[in-house]
Length: 429
Image 1 (cartoon, one colour):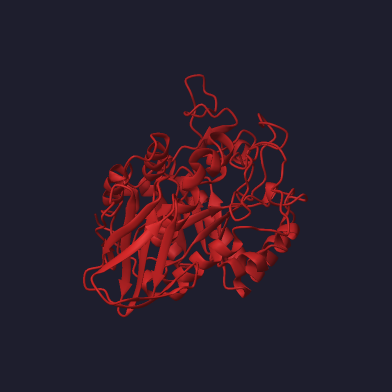
Image 2: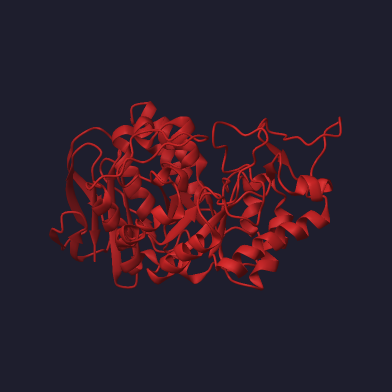
């Protein structure tokens, strides 16, 4: 596959934190979210992904507040969140703290009373009755028509607006596979002239490989479904998980899978990560942060949030002074930034699967780069496993276990480890 775009350098070992502004605080606005920026920076968050910040259509609105993804304008700020200067302040302070900001871009459809329905009705698809419609059964939105070249130009101009006026650092593109790949090629080519930014696609590259000509990273839905099935079947073995990992390893160079256990859709419609995965949740988080790719973290996972947040109405994450998983994520996210073993972006470079004596339950692998190495061992089962033999090959040296800070000296080919159910170890040097 031909790929003409380079990954922006800061994304090589980054992480992405999804911000649900409406539910993040009682106020549900930018100013209230600002107070969380220092905490998130301390936790190691690199990229803030804001769910759509544009105003929400009133016509055919769902619930009391409507869907973020049914916009009425591509160039305005949702007044529920604040004013333009409030968002500029977030970007300024995030940049000062070393974080980037990307915004959700919904290119396939708009709300029913988007301003284009009045000024450019020809931008939309029409059904046999000559009316706006959506082809996927979402009755609060209507589909745009990408056969119209003027629409494409207008959409690209709207994307440019957020780069030029707000200095955003990239886009998370909603249901990207519903919009023609040649539009995304056209858009990225034009936007590259202004600023080199990061492109995250809500699609699975295994189902939509052509889109990876354009996008830097994409969702791993097949991995999510496979891990859920593994847990539902009693976690008897991880062979199916390994097979899916092999498939993702075939992605083009300079592209990365995005690993996740929760997001706004999963939390609302399919359950919290604890409903879906229970004890498997933290082992999967360790995997997401250490396997080649990009970890996606949803608002409140660090709390942890154990309730579903409604999609169309106001609720809130119940923050308190005891954010139990702050230190857990800080260890993982800091490790990704500080250990050069995670700096390679090629899917198969710097990664070695390590054989072990219980390989139907334990996933063991090594990330390495020059003299830096990280050995990750995850017990994806409920069973206590003792004296598990890990074949390290030629790896030797003095390591530190990331969570316990225990010093471990490895002098032979084999390392022997004990695991409680659903436990993990990370050795770093």
